[in-house]
Length: 217
Image (cartoon, rainbow, N blue to C red; front, side, top):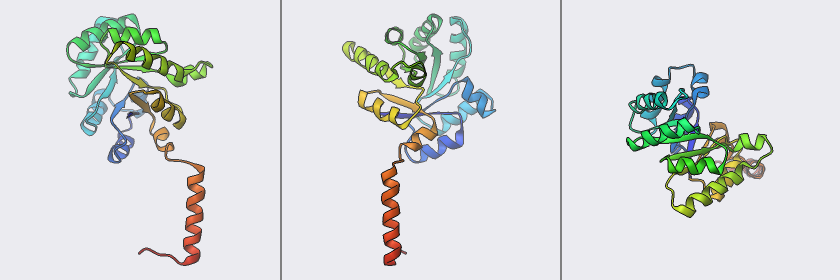
């Protein structure tokens, strides 16, 4: 499973990238606003740092304007994935932009029907939002499983990009289901390394080493 990092914080991306933990990046207007930087500038810097897909989202809501914005974003770098919302206009924009050879990430997916439409419109990635479904007492992970089954049934090449990841458990469950990609904040990716028994075992090893006077250098 590929790891995308969901942030516009270049320093955080760089740290994870140097460890080989970043296969791509997803951004959105909220993350760009949080960075306090110009969207074109920060997106270009991220694209120069990470060779994998970098999702940059349009802010228009009608198809023609989305297409225009998508073309502008695609000029930033060859690894841009234009991010469009899963609306009817978004699907129209997806169709045009994908046929022009651009990667397209269709975002804000909350149903298997929506995912099926996105695949037929030529989406490179579909982004189902797990955490937001869980917030409504719906099963976000089941949606990932449903989309995986549908795409496998018919050979759709659209990649399942699990989004709105809230926990390390989400990451492992998505990997077991067969999501192609998970995009998560840096804090969630780092939390995957944590386990109370690791901490407990390390403390015991260090205590024994100190008692025995063990030194390596």
